Image (cartoon, rainbow, N blue to C red; front, side, top):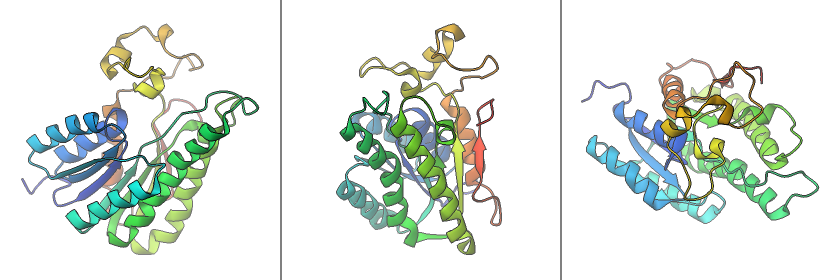
Amino acid sequence: MNDLPLSGKIAVITGAGRGIGKAIALRFAREGADVALCARSQKELSEVSSIIDRLDRTCLALSVDLANPEQVKNFCDRIIDKFGAVDMIVNNAGAYLERGTFEDSDPDLWWRTMEVNVRGPYLITHHLLAVMSQGSKIINLTSGKGYSAGANSNAYHVSKAALNMMTEGLANELWSRDIDVNTLVPGPTATATFDNASPGQERTPEEILAQDKSALPKGLPAWERVKHPDEVADFAFYLATRPVGGPTGQIYSLARRPL
């Protein structure tokens, strides 16, 4: 069907094997886009790509470690070879590796967080900018932690603050090409990262949302709500379909509290 909103568009989504990235990949494909996906787990990617194949969309899905510049470049080269152009980049993948205090942190984990959360989006975007045309969209998923200093998880806070500034700088650079760059802050979302699940113990969004709110991670205000990843995908789709001249350099938060 050629009358779908994203028909003829090419979307690149990182961290697309599960959670928010998977939800965005499936939503964009259902709306007509062909997609290029990456994640660490080839098994998870294969499950997502099989769904997209059944939608009769073209899907390139590669296992990529965003901390590895060679793997990132290979992924981007494969995208250009296969599609020739890119209309949307969703920098969704992220790492939450060092949750302790700064003093007790592991320097290797601290820096790997920067490599995945900052250098990864930089390299993806840098490699693909040349094949993005007028009306293209870049959506960077960040976090409320990028707007406030915590008492732990310093690397994650710093990385998301850096990605926020990358959004604003890119928006200033690319407005003359009519390429919009915006930040999307999902807020609490039923994902494995939010659930702080151990490997092999991940639960589905539905399982997370079914539990009593008192069993969810502490620190959320009473009026906050944990969302299904599909809700974040809905808003990513909204941003991806703004007309030329729409918002750029903006922060869109789905949280229910001030950042």
